[in-house]
Every structure is written in structure tokens, then in C-alpha cells.
Length: 191
Ligand SMILES: Cc1cc2nc3c(=O)[nH]c(=O)nc-3n(C[C@H](O)[C@H](O)[C@H](O)COP(=O)(O)O)c2cc1C
Image (tube, helix red, strand yellow):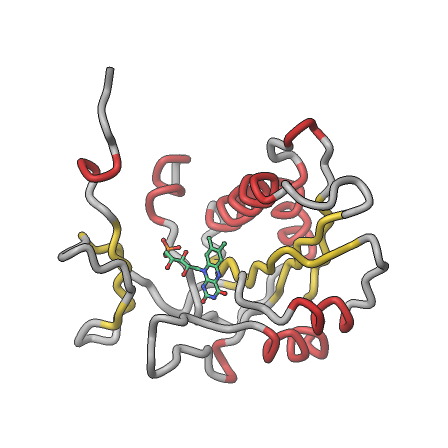
């Protein structure tokens, strides 16, 4: 895939094949995050890669999947993520104002993974205090978000938005449909 195909074909994945990811792959994705733009080049983000099964099982109940699907869309036992990358911020460097750093770093990470056809779910709905306790983080580190990773066991589809409804849904074939705003609705003008 060329970079444009990688960017446009990526969709959030919430059901994963149980194919392992190598340590080399995981480190490469974190390496892409490491090199992301950073305000003031402070580079205050730190990463924890969680890949052993005992720990991935402990993370699983601390994250929430697909809030718009009333019926729940939790990955089943054999669809759970293979690994997680926990994105932390060093608040001894800066206490707030690093959200854009996180955005740039996570996008680099998930695009690097998708270039390998490894799917991801960027997770903000997480029990941060419990994750921090589980990972025994020192006081200067706080959890910002988590990225769940693994080869996709679903292929969500981008669909054109209708009636301004942004909620993703399952169609009659059980395919997750993700409404995206039309180009003319997001581009104000070219001057
Ligand atoms: C900051 C952020 C936090 C998110 N948190 C969650 C989450 O906690 N659980 C989840 O299932 N999806 C989460 N998502 C995924 C979004 O639901 C998803 O990106 C959106 O529906 C658009 O789908 P797409 O990524 O396939 O384009 C999050 C995305 C972002 C950017």
C-alpha cells in the first residue's frame, strides 16, 4: 500500500485474529510514535508495550469498546487484542497541554501498524487509575490512552453520512459501518 492507501483504508478494528505480533513489529510501531512531531520538542510521551497474555487479560476489563453500539461490541474471547501500547505522559515535564503530542504520536503508531495490515483501536474510555496501578507507574507518569493491536478479524466499512448521524452501526450483514462526513462538508474553501 502506498501512504495514501494506508491513510484512507484504515478503520478502527475491535475484533482481532489471534495471530501473534513480533516484538520487532511492536517496537517499530512505537518507533514511529517516538518520531512524531512534539510541541517545543519536549517529547514527554512514554510507552509501555503489553504483550504477555497474563497482562493483556488484566488490561481487557479496564477498557470499553464501541460505546455507540447499544448491544455491546466487545471482542469475544478469541477476538481480543494481541497487544496493547499504553501511552503515558511525563507530567514532571509538563502537567497539561500535551494532547496534540498524543494525537500525533498515536496516529503515527496506528498508521505504522496499518502499513503492516495490523489493525488498531485507539482507546480513550479506559479506567486510568486502575491501569496506572496495574502497570505500577511512578508518580511522574500518567496514562493518556491505550492502543489495542492485532490483525483484523473484521473489516469495517466507511459509509457516507446521512442526516448528520455520526454514530457507527452494524448493517444487516453485521458489518460495522462508520459514517464519514462528505468532503464538501469539511472543506470550507480553497482560496
Ligand atoms: C481519542 C480517541 C479515543 C477513542 N476511544 C475509543 C474507545 O475507548 N473505545 C472504542 O471502542 N473506540 C474508541 N475510539 C475509536 C473511535 O470510535 C473511531 O475512531 C471512530 O468511530 C471512527 O472510526 P474509524 O477510526 O474507523 O475512522 C477512539 C478514537 C479516538 C480518536
